[in-house]
Length: 136
Image (cartoon, rainbow, N blue to C red; front, side, top):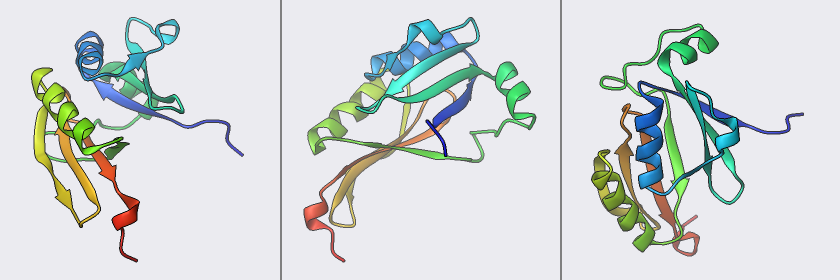
């Protein structure tokens, strides 16, 4: 049915967003970059997150852009390799200017993670999941 899926996010300043995500460890496919968008690569499977300036994103979506200060449309979750990686990424986010809204902590006895907002208020969830502790 479909060949690939990617996520498109509106941002106020593409260059600042790219610097933020580079500082926390993401890479970019620069051949797919324009003056108003960048192509961020996430994870082993090279999941694509396109960051578009709000004016361009608005043309594509033909809808009002969510005010991320007062609401969330999506929570983007990332899989971490370890608790150590969760803690390191939380520090990188803070150092890069992001906001940790949920500090690293245990959750439900088998997950460890934290939540952060990027420069544009999009919410991200980073989790280390120990499926051996998952109770069914």
